[in-house]
Length: 102
Image 1 (cartoon, rainbow, N blue to C red):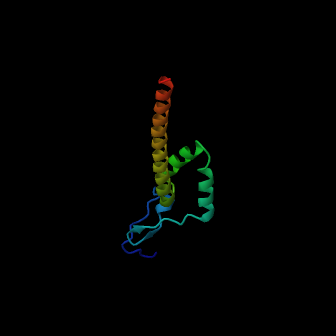
Image 2: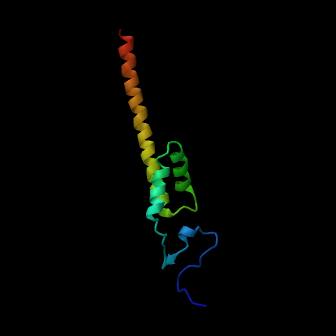
Image 3: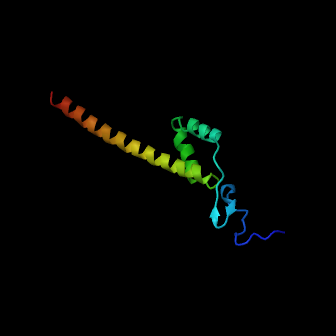
């Protein structure tokens, strides 16, 4: 049996994306081009994209790179929703005031 030096033992409960260890750093596997292509395709579907992004962002078995990307995408979605709500309020109040002044 080989000695692994100061590398901590891998626990079977660790997600597969975090099992490869070099020194004291966890190395996650590379996300393939096909996986990114599929990720972008799935996130282009309305409503499904929010559900999938939540699963990828907070799922324990998701690759850490994809998890961080999903969290960033959720932040962009939230920013878009806030901008849409503010625009709706501004345009709605302008239309309401124009309609009530006639």
